Image (cartoon, rainbow, N blue to C red; front, side, top):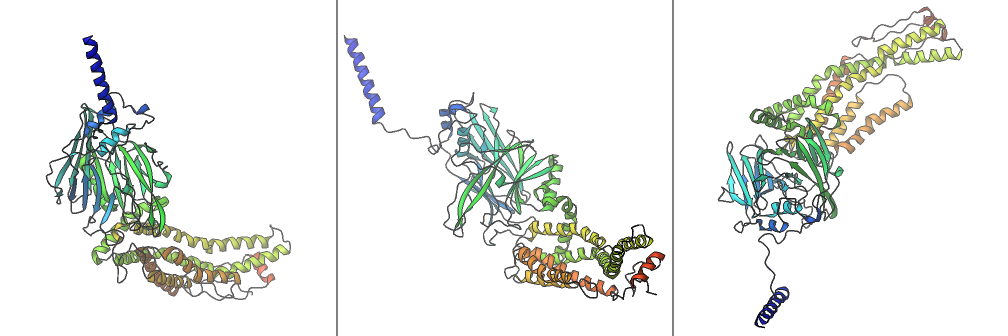
Length: 635
């Protein structure tokens, strides 16, 4: 009986405790810094949200946060850049480029703000426009384990070896910044950044283990890279960003729009796989964020969209993530800097000498679908522009001198073209006469094997061979790759970015604010077209109308459509080429003899008799002769 009473009292006491615990006891506080962590969601590789074997129960992951790791940001200052690292995930949250390799200061697109090329949020348009949190660079990604991924990137790491929150790395110095994190269930993550003063490249080493055994993982490049001053995309210097993957030495540029966007609220990104990638990058028009892992692998591309407001209207922007597979404890070479061709070549050579890496970072420059024509000419153009800048200390005048040298080198081709077209103009009356004689013979139903017809056709073929106008187009076609190469090179050159010229032209990479250059370019284009020699005598009305369109209308349309909003550097190049071309054309017109007036044609009989007897052969054209061509007299 006593035992029954004790058991009943024990049962009643237990029931009261359980009821109190369920209805009245306050909830236990969440582990520090983990209150905001989302619950695990089942994924295709993680059914029911259960961790992979050996990873421990999901509840054990919450024991990860050290109570003595308060929020902390570390700012690293070098002569070329400034970076901010957060102990939340040990990630890179902000990156500011301060100067080019030659020491010239860099500013944002507005010319006032510092050039911030990496943040954790989407770009803001108007001052009161909304923004979206995107994430940070160098977050760790564990496939099919979203809870562990979130934990690694949300937890606060211990910062080792740094007492203050700001440090400086001078030229030639090296500093290692280390973030470490452990958890009571055997997980350990260490991130180390080896930073070098006076260089844009640094090393990123990540080590992730479970009970001492390494785990497979990837690190994140991006997502928001590029000049953070919001601007509308165009076809010149505000081109849309791209994801770059290099396989076998060949770079593939993937537009963000070709990557399927991850739906809002999705627990796993929608990936676009790029297998066998030796290295990869995110690029905007002038700058790049490149990652070179220790071995080729499958780089996963994903995209997140964000909407902001720009000039009072909603604008959607696309942001790409690159998840780069790596090896625990291995060096990953990172480059965040300008796409300066010469500097990229020097970095590539340095990586070859120091680490035996066969990497050509010049692949970061996209020369378009004419790259096979442009790429061989770029080194010479780059050397000439830098040489003339060294003499003038002004990239505008360097462009003018570069244009002068190129046009002088092309003068023999221009002369050849002028001579060919002059020959065609001299022989035009003779072509017309032969065509009329052929028509008369056809009207007379003369057979094709008639000696008069045979001789007339032979003379036509000979005349076409000597003065075919299309032969004058060949030198022009040979000049085309050079013109395209200069155009592409000047459009991509980071040296022209915010480089002043004269007076109101404070930025050669921006359009002329007063539109003086496009107007002058239009006038010089009209002058160059007007100076082209034309055949004498009465002109066909249709040909006259075509000439008016070419001389007066086309330059205006060309300037309005292509150069009104083009960068000033490109307009300076084209305008200087027109002025030099006008000078050369005046010299050519003076050197070539005048086109003789057409003489009266021979009568039908005389002309046909001449054809039948084989007389009246023409001499070869001499561009310096006073009478370039002779015609058979009517006798």
